[in-house]
Image 1 (spheres, helix red, strand yellow):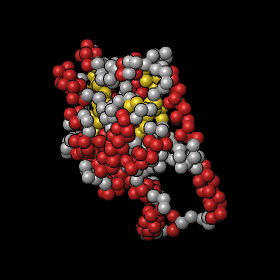
Image 2 (cartoon, rainbow, N blue to C red; image 1 turned 90 degrees about the horizontal axis):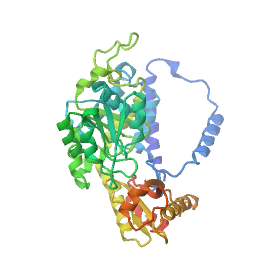
Image 3 (tube, rainbow, N blue to C red; image 1 turned 120 degrees about the vertical axis):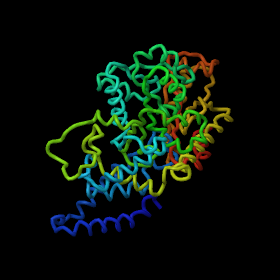
Image 4 (cartoon, rainbow, N blue to C red; image 1 turned 135 degrees about the vertical axis):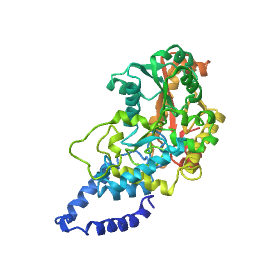
Length: 448
């Protein structure tokens, strides 16, 4: 049985309840005659088109950061979308705006901000980071925004949008930021972006050490926890506990519910430690939203129209899986367990090599070639990657590829010959809870 099938009766019942509410007004909501055959034909065609996707739902897919939302999130989103509220303002969606505030409050508690903060949901992590960098520019208009070489490319790109200087912090062969570089350029820096789970290999950067420098030199800290943020729920089970304990010291934090928050695309979030930054969003709309004197969400967001359905879906999910170690954290424990088990198999393997111990649930690795050359490593990585996608569903798999500089690779594995400037290794993202029990099967299919 499909994971969504048991929810269909609940969705039909909820739709009927919403229709009952609609019918209280008049018959203007009634639609003209529907050609059922045409609808069936269109949906059948859609299904055929959607069958061209990779199996994001299945644990044999361990490639990119993709997975279906929780069925309850999908149900709540679909139900709310029939009304199509706009969370730009209370007038556009009174209930879903309140749900957004409640959900964001739970996020603020999770990161340790308590009751004093400013925040809202966004259409994704890119926009959330843009908002964080926008505030960073407004606070320090004449200074740079700095991020490491491992940070997501969105930061460099958004600095161009904001016409703000971007400063790249070098990292060493173990992905550690050059703290001396930060010290030497501290007078130029207004905000440092610290990534809590890079999108490459899930590296958690040294937040605590950079916070010490911030206190000394006076720059701000933005924590890009788009991928890793929800792992703070199980920080006691992670190797870099010290860094997670400092998350509440960041001036702003981005977390993506559409990743480990089990939400549909797009649902990001931005949180600010100091609610006074709301002054940078101040605007006046001359024609709308006069029914409420309360602060509406559009007054603290760069975005205008935003889907109330996203807020309802996230809110509903948190009713089922609260932001606690035993709530949503129970799923993160399984994804982390999958990564650890897979890493242990790689460590014991005679055919494969673990690139580095994972901080979260993303694992980098490669097959050992007969010759100790980087080009051979890259060739084998591509062969394994392509073989998995061409195999039958009952024996196939989907991985991703990750490019590493030759210097970084040979520092970790000095017996390899650097016959190219970079090397391609394999990368697996174990973000589905089903991965925990599927790891032995996946490892066998890959040949580990």
